[in-house]
Length: 458
Image (cartoon, rainbow, N blue to C red):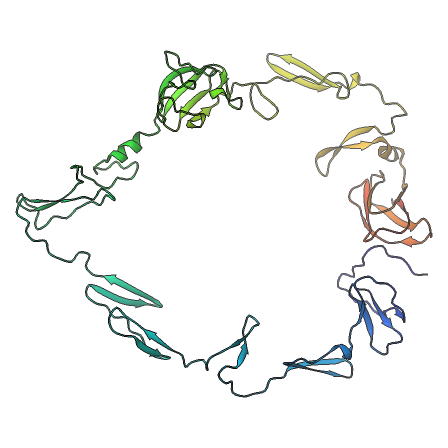
C-alpha cells in the first residue's frame, strides 16, 4: 500500500536516487504537472499533464520546421534547430528582422543615404555619408566643440551707437515690467555726462528687489519692505467666540460690518463658542486666532485665520487635554482598585474582590507572561490543565489546515497524523509555532478527517 503524502516534498537540492516514474498505460490523474511513463507508447516517452491534456516530453511528430527555422531530431533524443538562411547579398527593398522582432524593409543598402541642409542664406546643399559639416561663427558669434557638445556664444551684448544726446540730458527707459536695473552710464561718470534713468511714464523708478533678510545698503523696494513686515503679530484684543463681539467694540466673525483684518492680527478668546458658527471649530477661553489672509470689512471667512489651541480643553479618546482617571466599576471589567491622594491616582488589581472560578467555567482564561515575546497573553483553563497535571500527550481531529493547542508546555513533541476513515498514516507540514501550539498545513484539503496525535518527549 502506498504511503499518502498530503503536502509537497522538498529534497533541499538533494538527488532522488534509484527512482522511476509510475509505469502505466492510463493517465493516473489530470493534475497540472502530473507525470508518468506510458507503458504502451514506447521507449523514452514519459508524458506530463499541462492543465488540459497529457503531452509527450519528446515527440518528433510535434516538431515542425518553419519558413525560417529548420529542425532535426536524432535517435528520438537530440533536437537541433537552425536558421534556414544562407549567405548572400541583400538587395534594395528586401526585408530584415529588427531588434523589436518586426520585419521591415529598407529602400537601399545602409551607408548610402544623403541629406540636404538649408541655411538662412545659401543652399540647399546635399550632404553625403562621410561629409563633414562645419559650424562657423559670424559677426559677434563664436562656436566651439567640447566633446560632443557644440557651444555657440555671443561676444557683444549691445551693438549700435546713440546719437543726438547732449551733456546733462537724461534718457528715460520704462523698465517697470520687468524691472531691469540700469547700472552703466554713457561715457564717463561726470557732472556733465549723459545718464540713463530707469523710470515709468509716471516718473517712478524701478530696481531689483533685494533678497528677503538682506541687510546690506541696497535700495529697499516697496515689495522688500512689505515682505519684511508681513507676518508680524499685532495684538488686537479679546473676543466672544460665540457672537464674534470684540472687547472694546466691533465684531470679528458676524454680520456684514465685521472688521477688516490684516495679516498678523491676533485675537484671544474670552468667551467660548463656535468660531464663525462652525461646530467643527469650537473655541474656549485662552484659545487664539491669527489672521493669515487679509480681508476687507464684511468679507472675512474662517479660512482666513489660523486657530491656536490653548491645550486647556477636556481630553477625549483621540484628543489630548485635561482629563480624569476612573475605574469601570462592577461587572465584566471588575477587579480594579483606585485611590486619589494630592492629585495622584493609584490604580491596582483587586483580586480578592473578584468572584471565584467554578468547575463549570470550562472556557475561562487566565493571563500569563510570555518571556520569549516579553508580552502578556491569555490561556484557557482547558489548555492550562495538561500543564498543571503534567500531561504528556494530546489528541484532536481536524478536517483541513489548522493550529492545535496541545498545552504540553514544550516544543519537544512528536506529532503523527492518520486518516480516520482508512487508518493510514499521512504526512503534512508540521510547524511547532510555540511550546503549546503546532500548525498542521495541507497542500490540498484531505478527503477524510485527520486525527492529530501529539506526544511530549522528555
